[in-house]
Image 1 (cartoon, one colour):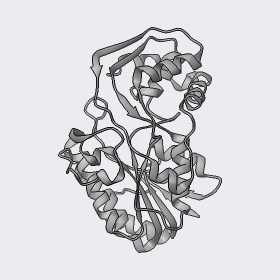
Image 2 (cartoon, helix red, strand yellow):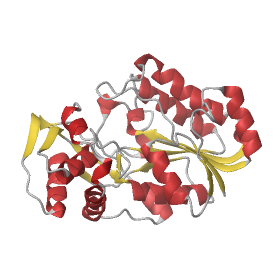
Image 3 (cartoon, one colour):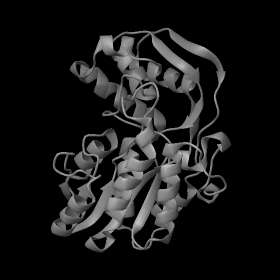
Length: 294
């Protein structure tokens, strides 16, 4: 299969391109080669490429503490990138994009949200609303599918602030462990997401939307304890703000039932990730971790 992956420098896109490379012919152009905001350029690229499938990983998310992107452009840019691809649906076989639990509406999150919780609420924030509108379109399109993410972690994630990579990086650099606030989340190992994506690209009659998550909600403190255990090190763990935040988790029973896949046990995944960071200390920067806001 000939596969186009957008957002090629991002964590998810880079991981997909690396792990799917043996089974697919992959194009992962950077922004200079393919500006997804340029409708004509996207249409010409898709027509010439004759791709069997498109994996749309590119996203515009202006996180308040960690991003320099313009929050006023989140809704417009996410929708322009998506619809510039979707409007050329006749020129590729299948488009799989990565939605977000934000499309349920953050204010209304509840434990283990299922696919049918969609459209119970309209998200008020630009990022959630952009993902919501994409899903509304995907449900009526013949060849567009949503793998809805809740949280993903892996070796190319941003270790400066993303929770699991940050804890692994701190341990690899012998730094104290710091959690901004404890919360319960469903976090999916990137290797599992790759397997789920591969299945969806090849499945004969898949559903239009699947929750792509582990099905196991864990709190940050207990996860940090597991990473500490697999590292074999000693470290002080501090929680900056007391209390437990709102749970953010999904029900993955539809995806597991249709695909037959089973996620890697979390302790095994945590060990693999910690071992990778410990073996690649040059990938990390002590000063950046210490100076980055959590």
